Structures are given as structure tokens and as C-alpha cells.
Image (cartoon, rainbow, N blue to C red; front, side, top):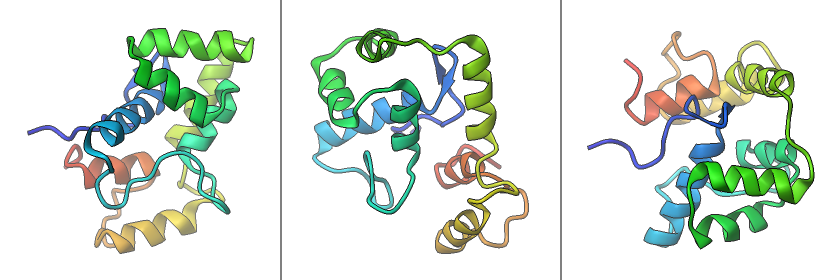
Length: 144
């Protein structure tokens, strides 16, 4: 059985993480909760990937959740984000965004948080987990 939430590396419209957020919104609505350790939206005092994606796209998380639950394809929901915010990131902006997200936790301000989460997941010994993307994939059985 595959994990019900896709890898953060999978893209929608070329953008990392967006599809994963849609999966979490849909799963939470269907099941009434997410698996332990998962969250949705903004957490006070923390910069979540959900929050960062919404900031990048210029949309409110609650509005994105409501739009997602109305139905439609991932691409239609992304297009809604562009129309709602009145801006569509350029290919260069998406490249910079993806580079930032892809490397998050590797030699940056989030490195200590990554190590803490690795330890909590009993993966602190894994030197091959260098980023949050690596950690998510390892926890969800997508990484060796």
C-alpha cells in the first residue's frame, strides 16, 4: 500500500509541496484527522511548509482548503490560487522556491529542527537524511 500523502518532491504546475498539501486537506476531510505527526496549515510560532506554500502563492490556507474540498484537479486548484492572488510566479521564481524548499534543513536555519525531528522519529542516526524532504520520504517509506 502506498502512503496516502504524496512526496513533497512531486510537483503540481512545477511547484514542490503543493500537491502534498492538497492530499492532506483531502485526507483530513475524509478521515476526520491526519496520521499522528501531521498537521495542516499554520502553527503559531512555527513556519510550516503549508504556511510557506500559501505565502508563496499569496493565498490564505483556509480559503485554499475550502477551494480544494469543492473539487477539481490539482491544476485547477493551482490556477484558482493564481487568480485569487492576482499573480502567477515566473519560472525563475518557481525555480528559486523549489531550490529553497528542496534543501530546507541542510546547512540552514532549520538544521537544528531537522535533527530534532529525525531524533523524534528514531532516525537521528541516518546520515543520508539531509533535508526535510528526505525525512518525509524516509518516514513514509519512499526512501531507502
